[in-house]
Length: 238
Image 1: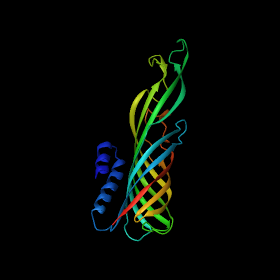
Image 2: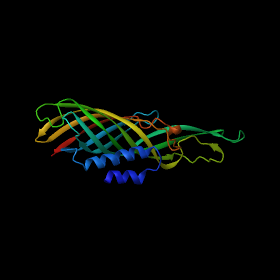
Image 3: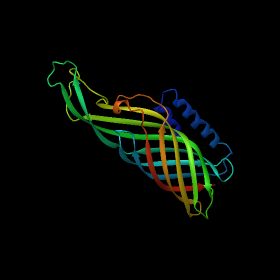
C-alpha cells in the first residue's frame, strides 16, 4: 500500500495511470486467496548508466514482493528500487547571439548529478528449479513494466550570460523527470536454509516513453539505459 500511495503522489502524466492501475490490480489480488504463498526480498545493487554522454555508477537497494498464482514455476513480482546520485560532466560551447559580441564563444563545463527511483511490476518464470525448491540451484528470468522517477541536478563551472549567449541543454538548476520502462533480467538463487534463499540478478531498464527534459543532456530520450547487478535474500512465507 505504501508503494501505491507513493506512486499516486508523485505522478500526474496520463501514461502513468496504466502502471498505477497495474499496482491497484496487484493490491486487490494480494488481498484475495489466490496466493497461498508469497515471499519478500531485499538486495544491494550496483548500477551502471549506459546512456550516451551520461555514463555513471550508482549504488542502490531493492525491496521486492513475489506472489505465486499457481504452479511452482511462475511468480508475479512488484518492487521499489532507489539509488544514490550518479555523477558525470560534459563540456559545451555557448555561441554569442550577436556576431559583434566579444568573445564570440564561451566554453563551459556542466556537472550533473542524476538520481533514480523506480517501481516495477511483472512476471517471473523459473527455468530450472522452482520458487520453493530447497535442494538445487534455481534459475529464472523476468520481464515487466516500470516507472522511473528521476531527478537531475546541473551546475555550471562558470557564469554564462544567457542574454548574450545561447546556452545548450542541460539547463542549470534541478528538475524531476519521468519515464515508463520495460524491465528485464536473469537471476539465480540457492537455498540458504528453510525458506531462505540467496539470489543474484542482472537487470536492465529500457525507456518506452519520450518525455523531454531540458535538464538532461540535449533532451536525451535514452535515459535510462542501465545494467544492474543485484545480490540479496528472499524469504518464503506461507
